[in-house]
Structure formats: C-alpha cells, structure tokens
Image 1 (tube, rainbow, N blue to C red):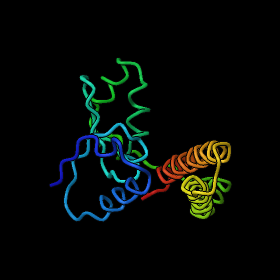
Image 2: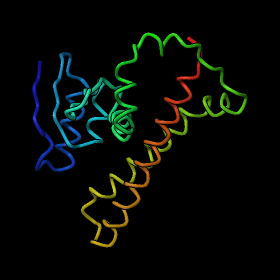
Image 3: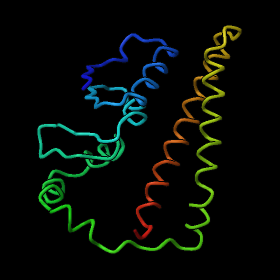
Image 4: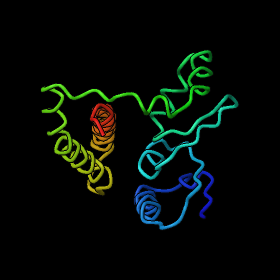
Length: 163
C-alpha cells in the first residue's frame, strides 16, 4: 500500500508525468490525497469523497463533484437508497444516433488526447516566448476540457448499454 498526501505540490510538468505513469503502473493499492483533479481522474479507479456528510464511493472525481453539488436532502436520500436497486434497473438501449456517437467516441477521445499532448509539448518547448506559452497553456486547457467532456459522455452512453 502506497500512501501519498499532496504528492504533486511543487513538481514540474515532466516530474508530474513521471509520477502519474508510476502510479498507473504501480501493482499495489494507492491511497492518494490530492487537490489535483487531473491526477485523480487519471490514476484513480475509486474515489472516496469525505465531506463531513454521508459521503460515498465514486468512479471518478467528476462523479463526486456532481454528487457534491446536489442539495443535502437529495444526498441523504441517495446515500440511504440501496445500491443494488439502482443497478438492477433495466438499462436503456442506445438510440441510432447514440450508437453512432458511441462507435466514434474512442477515436474522438484519442484525437483530443493527441491535441492535448501537442499543446503540452508546446509548453515544454524551450523555444517559446511568454506569449506563445500563454497561448499554448490556454489551448491545452481547452483541449483537456474537451477530452474530459468526451469521457463524461462516454460514461453516460456506456451506462445505457444493457449488460
């Protein structure tokens, strides 16, 4: 078991990437406390949200964040409801357009990740000036946001596929 408390503080980008890769490849369990949302989404398989309330276990940080925005009354009702009931509900089928979207989703995600990687390399390039770095950072943020939305949509569509 590896216990990490805010491991990304004061790390440069290449070191952050090396840490992420090491955590993804780590064969054991990792308990990670971090404010770095990107790191949490990239390396976590389970997120435990502790906020002083009923808490819960989530698939990723964005799922916890969505749950955390719910009004308190809804949270209490959701956390008291047995999980087996919600998973036993019949899954909806994908519509024709959703199926087409599902079929193209992996390619779109790969393209988005390649774009994000391109802008990440631009940030690391020693040849850039301040203006170019600011532009590359802004484009990287946009690309990462697009990829995150694609992953959210993918999870949404996957939830509709009968198992």
